[in-house]
Image (cartoon, rainbow, N blue to C red; front, side):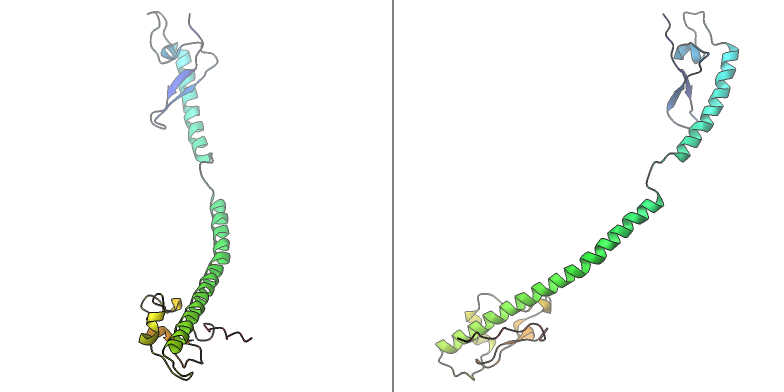
Length: 189
């Protein structure tokens, strides 16, 4: 029994895949529509071949049109909107990031100044120094847990290039950002 099947048309010059199209007047198997014999008796009629040839040309044009008009990717407007949104988010986030980094550097430097002041006070108590004595880094380095440098000074900063030790009754100073990196005053009872 022969079933109704679409007539295959291979568009080898246009698309590298085989597309199947149906011509309603045909009731041939794909092998019959391709011009092959079925049971050594049936062959595609010349009139049907002409209909399929015309249909093939139409379908080639249709396939070419549909390939160019299909929405396969993003449009320029969509890409521009995404880029604008990313730019807006970056415009909001970058200043906040810079501000957060500056604030964290300031807090780290102030904590370093507290440690240096505490080390200088401890040195003065243990060596019975006067309140106007000025320590040097080698005097207080033993009282510091680790090397202390201002984070705003960069990778090449040293203690001598970032901090200034003053008399015991005065707070140490930051040389990198002296305006905001200031040790808080002592609390009074």
